[in-house]
Length: 320
Image 1: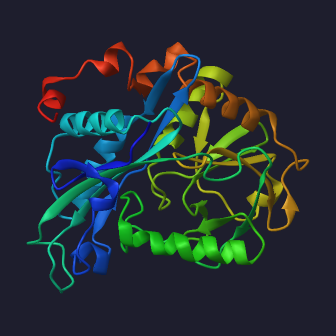
Image 2: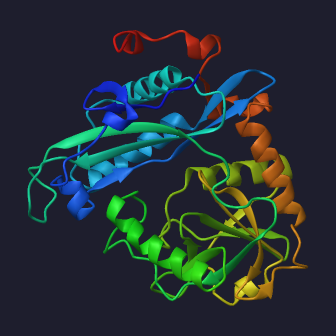
């Protein structure tokens, strides 16, 4: 039977014991960064596959630099700790891994320097974050995406997600499933927590890294799949708001959202209002890849319980 555990203050503990003081700096000021990592259960293979584990910790390392923070372990050690935590939990279902690096001192005062950094990681079961089957109804948010000279979107900074929360709640209260952010230039940026793609006139198009988007790991996977599997080269360019309404297909993607197609934007149907062929093919191939059913994408995955996953490294052995 699975058990809920966390990696907290350098040890593996029951999740309910992984608690912080209410004076903790990150709790009061949002001074921390995090990652969201999925692992997919393959019942036929009786294996749990962690998706892009190293890539996520490398992005976390970059987020830490922006925040004057230092991870307490190397990326390789963090991967080993995460794998050991997942094994100890023993899940046989899709899960979500959340590592967080936070300013841990119980002090008041707005700053990033001269503060202690702590790492915690927890694991929870997770299904679909958004509806990937029935089509999302999206609305352009009245809230603009924060830009790189405010809170850099390329870093997953805890406090920055208030921007996303404002947009998502506005969208939901207005009858939409998801929000679409515009940046300060009025260009389409991303969803509240997803990267954006559209098909228009036979081209797959996505906003560039300098449009105040998260440098998405799933976004990079989609670009790879489109090229290798469909022969589609992705065009990276600025996208106007009105292009939403004349797009042939739109989909959002991210670790949480996976690949979710959009049926309406601002009450206008996208294409014929049904899931388009490119969105369908990319979603289906993506789900096969992340579940370990396409060996040509095995480099994306790390097996938790199999021969490679079950044999602990010397670093993992020292954690037992």
